[in-house]
Image (cartoon, rainbow, N blue to C red; front, side, top):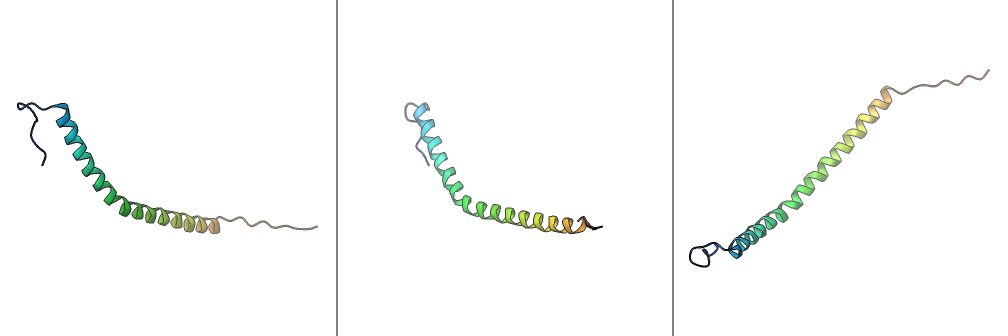
Length: 73
C-alpha cells in the first residue's frame, strides 16, 4: 500500500498524483492482459457474421432470381 499523507496529516497534490499514477498502472496492466482474448473473440464474431451474411445472401439470390428468356424471331 502507499504511504500516508506526507506532512502534518495534510494530503498534498503530490500524494494525490502518486496514488492516481499507481492506480493507472494497475488498470493498464489489466487492460493489456485482457486485450488478446477480447481481440480473438471479436475476430471470431466478425467471421461468423460474414459467413452468415454470405450464406443468407446466397439463399435469397437463389430464391428470388429472375429468369430471362431471349427469343429470336
